[in-house]
Structures are given as C-alpha cells and as structure tokens.
Image (cartoon, rainbow, N blue to C red):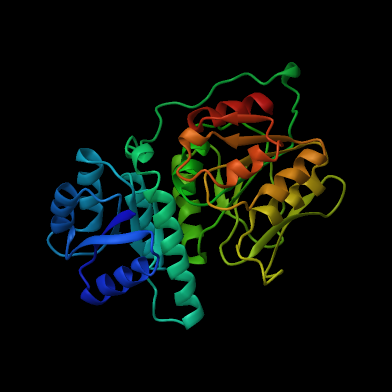
Length: 347
C-alpha cells in the first residue's frame, strides 16, 4: 500500500482527492490536513510515502510547507495546482523547492475531464510513492554557478544539427537542469516537448529563458527555426518541424491527430525532427511515465541520429527512458547531471 497525506484548506477538495486516491486499492490516505502547518506536522508524525499539497492556504501556504518538508524529512510532494498563469508560476516555485510534480485541481469541467484528472492523480501518486526512498535525496533546484565548457570535436564542425528533448513526470526539474548547464554559444537549435497543460508552457518557457544561457521561447506556428534557440512546444497542440526549403525549417502547430493521449506528443515532435534533419538529429529522453518518445527516438536512430536516455537512478519516474533503453536504441544512458555535457560533446 502507498500511504498518502492530503493537504488542502478546502474540505471539499480534501474529500474529493481522498475519494479519488482510495478508488485505487493500492493507495491508502492515512491523513488529511487543513493548511501547510498541519501538513508539516502530520508529515513528520504519520510518515506518508507521498503528500498532495495545495498552494494557497492559511497560516502556512504550500510553498512554505514544501520547503520545510524537503529540508527536514524529504519525500515526494505532488502539488495540486490551478490551471492559470498564476498557478503555473506558483507550481514552478514549488518544484524549485523540491516538489516532485503537479496535477490540476480544475474540477469544474466535464465528467470525462474529471476522470482524466483522477487517472493522472492515481498514476502519479503510485509512480512517485513507489520511488519515495529514491526521491528522499532530492533537494531544491539551484541555478548553477557556471555551465559546461566542453570543446566541440572534429575541429569545431557540428556533428548534430538539431536536438529534440522529451519528458513528462518530473520533467520540469530535469529540463531545467539540462538547459541551465548548456553554454550560450551553441549554434544548434533545440525543441523541448513536455507533457504540460497549455496554461503552463508559456510561463515555463519564460522561466527557462531567465535561467538559461541560451534563449528559450514557446514555439509559434510558422516561425523559422533559428540557430542556438530553444523552442518549447505549446500545451494542448502538436508541434512539428517542417522544411520550407533545403536550408530553412519552420514550426508547424496543429491540433491533429486529435485522438492522441498526449498534447504535445514527444513521438510527434521527434519524428518530425528525424525527417527534417536526416542523420543530423539528436534525441534526448528524460524522466516520465509511459513510453511516449519511444517511436520518435526510433525514428531519429533509424535516420542515423544520436540518442541519449536519462539513467534510472536519476529519474523521478523511469518509464519513458526505460522504454528506450529496453528497446536497445539508446546510444548512451547518462545521469541527469551529466546530460548537458554529453549533448555538448556530441554536437
């Protein structure tokens, strides 16, 4: 059984989250708390495997509570966030303080959407709860003092013309870790695809831009790909690279295919990169549940590109990288803190 603690100032939300979690026979809610202060106290006394944490609460908010828990008794914390720009900024602040991931709390919607939220809540709770001991070493993110300064090989010639990065659960922290350790003089463009709602991707791009040496922006339909720029796929849509000419590549953003589970899909992004940059692309797959990205990495590999997968011991959830490693298509399996250096070495 995975033991969960639910922290929220709303009695309604505490009841809903508890019911959702306990609909799965492998999860037991061992306690609830009405604010951050009570959440900290019950975390220390009940020793749950995972905590779901609201952000805005009286006495002590979720950000302060997360900081205290991660400092004194670290364990996986799943933030329960509103799908707003303000909610996005607060969520990324919580992730910086050590929270493992987040889910949406927008329950005033259709029954189908509520079911999706329940499925996501249960899946992330089980995945993170089972990794409680491994995540106990997680500490708040800190912007690095410097960046990787590895010389390019082959007399400075570029071996990779485009880098595609995919991630899901635990991805915001992992992507931040990789991008902030890259030097600002790289000429190679990047495309980052992460399972993230539409309201969050713009704020996440702004955050990465403020922390990284490379310019980061949310991708826009029709824009030309520029050297040395990092493009983040918008949530709720599918992003592809398309060729306008032999030398010009642009971004295409559409809603199709509409039946895909993930929007954006890492597979869709990476397959388009493999087609546009034959033999000159690199795929990097980071922490996440499921196997989205497997087919995209296969496409990059089959076209003569290079592939990197994050190592199991540094993943929040070893799902997406595991699928790639088990398929035998990862050129290198690398700890998170070494991935930036490997990217630079392979460019």
